[in-house]
Amino acid sequence: MNWKTITKAGLAVTLSTTLLLGCSSSKDRLIMVTSADYKPYEFHDTSSGEDKIVGFDIELAQLIAKELNIKIEVKDMDFNGLIPALQSKRADLIMSGMTPTPERQKSVDFSDIYYESKNTIIFKKNNSLTTSDSLAGKKVGVQLGSIQEKEAKKMKGVQVVSINKVPEIIQELKAGRIDAAIIENTISEGYTTNNPELAFTELKNSEPTGSAIAFPKGSPYVKDFNRVIKKLKDSGKMDELVKKWFQNS
Ligand code: ARG
Image 1: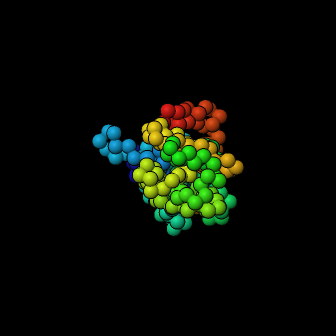
Image 2 (image 1 turned 90 degrees about the vertical axis):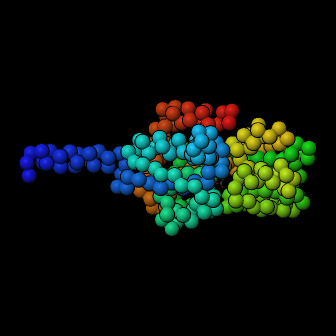
Image 3 (image 1 turned 45 degrees about the vertical axis):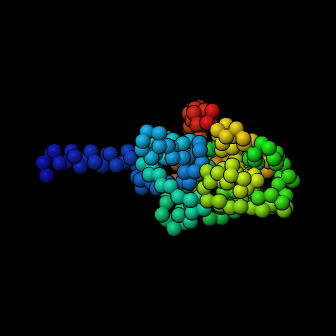
């Protein structure tokens, strides 16, 4: 071994320790699954001619990855398949505007909440279905596997129509095949702005529907991600991201 190889070896050791310092776990590429049907959290942007998954969650994930010196690769799937993907080790984390419910906490670990939202009823302006009571006897669209589906199932007399992708829920609503839908305010805002025939109201007495990152049970990453989430909140970077994605979306 000449001195050059020795220096190279030394350098390699130093580099890998620096990488590891960023994050207490050893994997340097994590697979993140999401349901990219949820503008502005995650959606397909084809405006550049290329199909890219972008949004608040995606940019937040990249910021966290940068802080932790890791790479995050994003994969798209149905919302209903996200937790199973984590459980079968096909993914390392979920970022998908997912609410950390006690029921889900039985099968995954969640980070701290990084953004809050609320449930709304979205409907056609001409049949103002503005309260949960008004939904009795009506067909109400919800995303399959979502907390909105659970909420709708608790409402007396509601015919729940579970649909895989959120844009399809809106299509069904516009086509009159469902009467209303339950969707988070952060999503309803965009759809009502772009579809003047639609309106939404906040669903009364429904719990806040914050978003958190899901990991497999016992994952060493929860602590690292929480540390960075806190840092981004404290530094004002999180507010910047929120402004960018949630204002005039
Ligand atoms: N917050 C709701 C839930 O956790 C809906 C999330 C839907 N997310 C999505 N990317 N489609 O059930």
